[in-house]
Length: 209
Image (cartoon, rainbow, N blue to C red):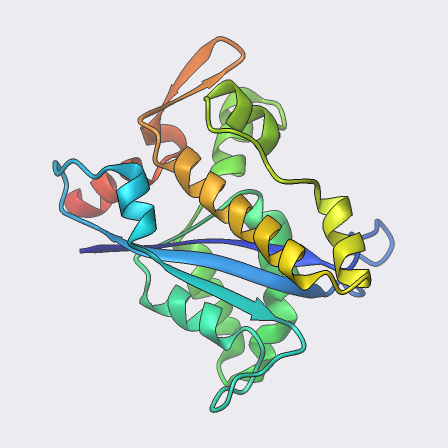
């Protein structure tokens, strides 16, 4: 079975040009871990995602037996063949990097997770030579919409509206997974095959490797 983890992070602020991610903290990280059958099998997307395991980590909650607040997420990354996100190589991973210090060999573990990551945003940006928004991609491909915006997620954290924040983060994860599982993505009248941006493309490469 091919193990996939799709994730997203929310933060208490945005990085700045002067300080980068130094003062930006992850408030909530959500993920969906699921297993895909062998190449050639027909996986129904909704059934596949419904069978997955949801993960939510809060920066101020450390579960018994764990050393850091995001250990459960990092353990899921360890077990995955593929980690998937949207703009995660430039945003989510840099935000999380400081939390890898909770374990020995942090640098090696951090890079091992990035190495097996499919960043849907980066793949599409590099091909399209533009910065596609998740909300635009969802709308154009009939996948609904996000619940709100990242700016509102910061407000939710400040007001400690954790249920809303978790719902927002989990929906972003689900929508990213749905997008990454499409056989073709439409964007401004272009048809982009999964070999460019998708989970199926990565799974196929893995089976040939």
